Length: 125
Image 1: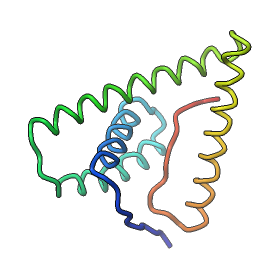
Image 2 (image 1 turned 90 degrees about the horizontal axis):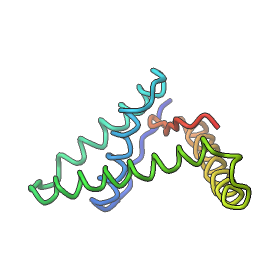
Image 3 (image 1 turned 30 degrees about the vertical axis):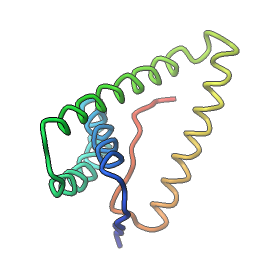
Image 4 (image 1 turned 30 degrees about the horizontal axis):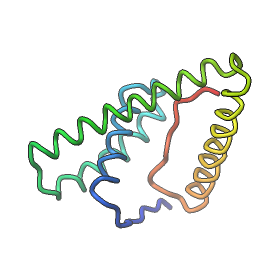
């Protein structure tokens, strides 16, 4: 059994999620993870197609994707330099541990409910 639920989100949340999935699609190498990313992206792009488009919206989406790439790159850098600066990285470790636990719990919930959408991460640590 697979499950998909629909929830109301703002157009900005939809675009944010789409841009993050586009970045994942560009950067994740694992084919199983990519298949999950692409399946979720296709569902969200279909919803995006229901919204009116404009040059301004396209610009906002591009800027949002750029901002998400900056965040992604920063997070990757912190993970690469995990043990170099004790106090700053202590806080990053706490934050990342919480985010990783959040990911594990979300995965468990999705597995429990047979979700058709599987969130993927590319972080190795």
